[in-house]
Length: 289
Ligand code: MN
Ligand code: MN
Ligand code: MN
Image 1 (tube, rainbow, N blue to C red):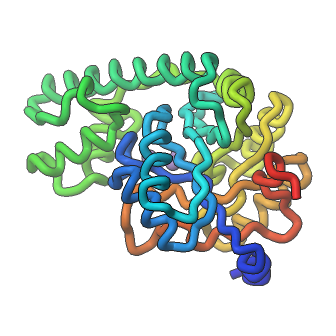
Image 2 (cartoon, rainbow, N blue to C red):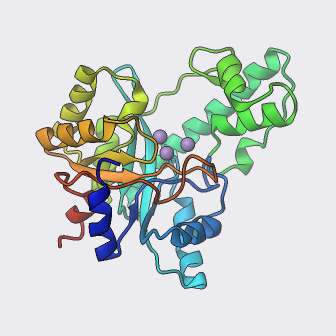
């Protein structure tokens, strides 16, 4: 790996940060108790739980750490789906006060939108003759398209998740409904009002040209964003260093996160998350060394 040296440094400090993962409070597979146990077993010392548009799992995770006496510090986080230009951009909030009214209000609005969208997409599926019966929106903390996809697969309408998205749930497909997500600017403001750090998630997932990526980061910086995810478990060679360079040029700290959703051979909590040496770690902005 390009930053193998740095892992030695982290080991010396005995700190391993993973600042992006999901529990079953959104579209992750593990309960918070299993997630934190797995993180600790992988040597993670600082874990941010960043479920989609909800912080409902944080308290449960915190309790589980206490109960299992794990050597793990939990960083309260959230991943907020935002709109910016024509794009859907994900913003990670780290070290947030989960009870702050500004954040609570924004997440409640997002949650309502998700529930309405989930029901509207299900209605579209039914109208198309797809008689699928996924969990009720009311029974889910945070209904996502993944829940619809899982039901489509389990009940035999499609052979796998990818087909479910390609045929029905993906952007522009038969059952797709566009959503009026929070603006990126408002989400950054809410995270920071709640005392947190705002970080642009997985910048290469949006399929932006370099010019647009720079524009996203620069405009976010103008709105006060604190950082950008530089180290992501699965990255194309070169992407991490390119992001580190862009972050440095624009004046953003770098974050590191696996975006773990469940046990997979290719993605693990805490794996392959070293920041390049010239990146300011986002955690230094809340724990100056
Ligand atoms: Mn997800
Ligand atoms: Mn995301
Ligand atoms: Mn994520």
